[in-house]
Amino acid sequence: MSSKSPSSTQPTSTPQADPAGADARPGGPRPAGTAHATLRYTSMRATIFLACLLLALLLGHFGIIPVTGTTGYIFLVGLAALVSAPLSYVLLSKQRDQMSAQIVEKVSGRRSRTADRIAAQNAEEDAADDAARAASAAAAVPAPAASAPASAQQN
Image (cartoon, rainbow, N blue to C red; front, side):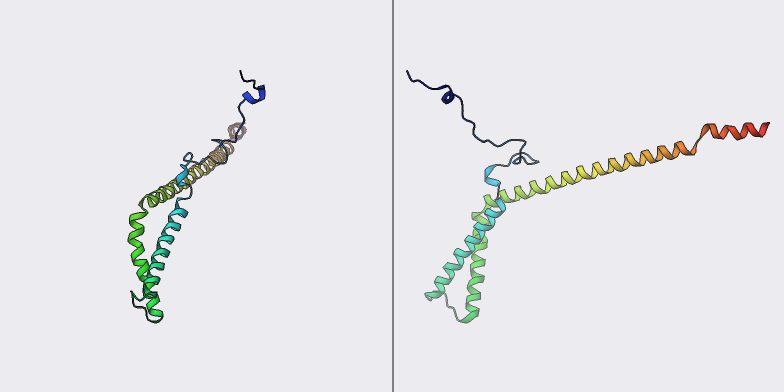
């Protein structure tokens, strides 16, 4: 028989994400893989370009690709960009899809918040306009004051 103290049988409280706390997003919690999708895609694309540039520079250094002067190095940079573009397109399709989903989520969240804000402002404006019309209508039709001059004319 193992003897456990009452404090050891109680579950320890571990900090968990509060669903209504600071981590809450308008569209709900975002999956962990899409938190920084744009940063991840951009850094991976830059890495692919730099790897292609390094490869081109090495091929130029060993004479496999002829490099003469500054224009030769500009050619190597262009060649690295030309090779890295289709590689990025094929290799980073998953990251690109995550990035576009993240952007769409942010844009739709901003649009819905903007629409909510505009609707609230319109409601405030309508309420103020209705109150002003009601006040002007009450001031324009004073019923007891209109009947007093008519009775004075008859006497």
